[in-house]
Structures are given as structure tokens and as C-alpha cells.
Length: 96
Image (cartoon, rainbow, N blue to C red; front, top):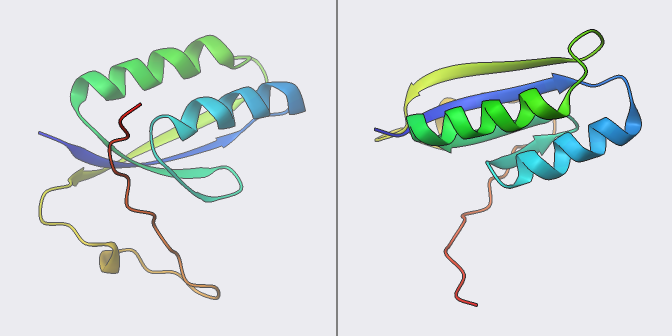
């Protein structure tokens, strides 16, 4: 079962921040500076957590993963924003 997650991070070093940002683009949709929304299976969550674990400095950086529950039947309208509206790109498979 897929679950929706918000992943946010505070990385003190610019080089590590860029590595985390690039890695997170493979797991979810970028919402704002250090915030992603990810629709993940349990195996994908473990893979993401492991990848982030290896990239961050555990004495200086912080990553927060918030499980919002099952993604089935959930719509973007359930996430409230103030100011500029949030837009989510629909991801489609690419044939190369």
C-alpha cells in the first residue's frame, strides 16, 4: 500500500544540501525550498531513508519524514496552503 509523506530537511552545508535535494527529486515532488511530497511504498520509504542516512551529517543536519497516511483516494485539495498556490506535476513513466 502506498502512503503519502512530507519530507523536509535542514542541511547545514550547501554541498550536502544539493546532494540531498537531487536524491529527493528521485523520490517525490519538490514543493518548496527543502520540502518534498512523496507517494511511497514501504520498500521505497526504506530505500529513501537509507539514501538520506548516508548523505547527511548526523551531528549537524536534520531530516523529518511525516507519514500522512494512505495515498489512495487522497487529493491535493486536502493540503492547505496560504499565499502562492501549490502545484503538483503529474509524474508519468518515461520510455527511453
